[in-house]
Image (cartoon, rainbow over all chains, first blue to last red; front, side, top):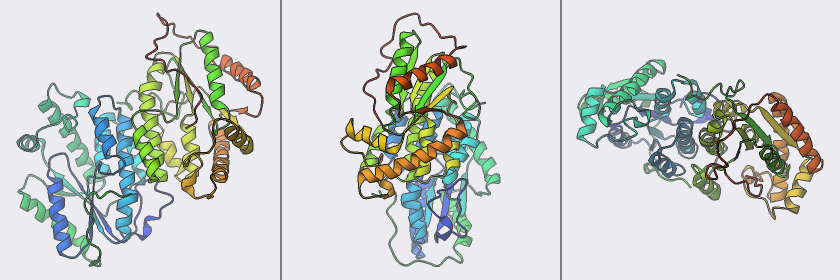
Length: 245
Length: 251
């Protein structure tokens, strides 16, 4: 990362300026196909000889189970939920992302702080607290935003895995049933992402295209970042979400 | 929309009908004993009192335990886990009784995080922002004690040995756990001194006799409650809602 820096109040005990790798965040609402595309990107980068490490929202060894359990209950409040996500994020950042970047890896992050920004904003109407809370995040070299409209998204989700409670924002009681609630909630999220796309200069990719076209577009956006990066033919890629002890 | 009905947040006094009284101090300062005695007194005056203590929510208990055991907690995750615990208790235990007009007594509050996390190397400005959703206490007591007296009280009484994180062993201050405790808690005392002036905490001389301190504390609380109109319940205590106060417990 040229000039690695934190989003806000950072980790005072960790200097980010000497991180050699690249941090690429892939954002977009539920069901736009982020994980599939990340797999293909990893393959593409590794074939070229880059070391790749992937990390995903709620995948830390410290927090993943706790978050699962908290979501199963029905009494989690806005602050605790955001703080659980923040703890998961911090654990992965310090134990996985920063070490990988220090060793020159390209880190592909499946969701990043912007997901938390959108979700908390939709729930509270306030964006200051969540942005302060996640101030210790590294600013990514590139944010790829898989953009979709809510009509296409709803069809796609029904066709594949179905709608679930949290992805429908049922805790917000936005609609009378799962479908209405899903559409309202996801529209609000998309609206937030669209605003952030301008504010934080996301690279927007149209996720209504065919998977091949999306992948092609993602690669085109990543390519300029690679030029000037020395390839690493050293250590094999880390296993996705590998637990760190 | 506001922050989920949180009221003013930490920057201004809260506007709930209840009152929030908190105690702060390092382990061995005697703050929990004093709060227990205060609670007995308030209850004898028929006030509706609700008690809550630091690091006691079910939400992150197992995670904190796991992280401590594997020693994988960083200053930031340590801080965030405690903030999560606090948020959950604030939402479920502190806010409802405050809104209902009760007296809430808290053994440790956000200042504990401000002091400890700063010593662990987390940005002091950041920690203050994280806890911005908390209600500002109506009364905040700080029990000030010299480090040696605290150590003597702890080793002479409740504890044979200090625990890893409470002694700040994660900071590699000293291989000897008692020495590490001394250094770590001394630094926390320094942080508390700064916090006392920043937030105007009421300082109690924790070297005095227990009953002398308690009389002083009751006098101050009585003054603060002069204009407080307690809510009268229609029934006796609901034991399911009231948590029992057992032996004072640190951490």
